Length: 426
Image (cartoon, rainbow, N blue to C red; front, side, top):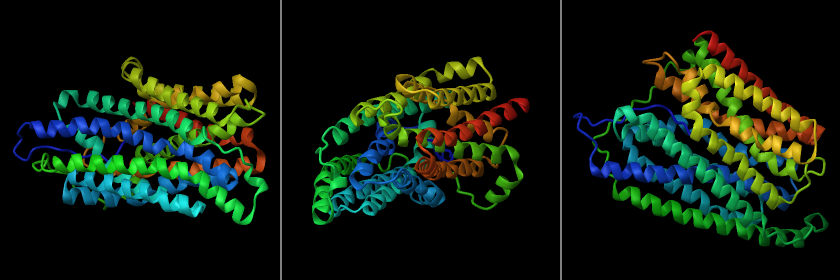
């Protein structure tokens, strides 16, 4: 889901990209790896904070609300900033903002107050949004036009690898060192002291993240002039609402980006709670973390084979089929228990793999001058990751985790209908 508003990078004189710009491209591949992990490590943070602060499902899912609201609030301002200062300097600013947000985890851990963690995540989300606005256009443009799609696919593969490895490692680090103290039995000063003590591992992990982000910002600053001849696409805000209201394809596509990101994040955010539930598998948090890594690993495998699949079959049909299979797997999980219920929901990850790029391409198909505005609409729709998980939490708190699976089922049903709708108009 790491797709940003479209843009073009080109030398003003039409010259070929030089060696310094090629170095920026290699750094960009590494950054895709890191950004995937930074975004999805929230799935590991949620159960840690849920236990630490004795949160409801709704309250725990506010982690994703705080993070993904940045996409809605900062996508357009980030595009304007990048257009003014250039891509590489924009990247430097993005990395430094992420580093600042990561550093805020230190006072949050020392305070032992839940809302302070949410504030830190909101800042990190703002930095990630700024990075996302420029990463994909730069990756596409830094090289021959005929191989642009393969470069972006390669970069997205790095993103998925980063998700898999960081989620797996994060589960071992954050959830493998539980104190064994039942926080529900504590109160007052003793409860606060225990929260601060257990928050220390979170603060330490994000301190290392801050150091890594600052180091990468330094590397990009070293090559800050590499793309000085590049021209960023003008950010056109006017007419965006009219395009959304008047173009059924863009409108339907944006709704599906909203529901796709919401469903994918929804499942990932609540997989720990679901798999550790006695009515499902009843496994430990660390074991659930490993299965969560496989959920994201399925998306990685699907993206690896995605190019072949989309060449063999029409994209609308692929989208409807993948969404239909996701619905079937979720229903199968909700109506069963034990290993069958657990692995059914994990396998949904594979069928998430092609949805974002397919929805995005179908939603912007046939557009020319309106493509940048449509792309901005799609990127803003990523806010589904902020709103759908709390909705899942509300249903889970009131009716249980099994019935809450109706939320992602509805999301995938909308996506399947879009695939069929687009197929009829192909």
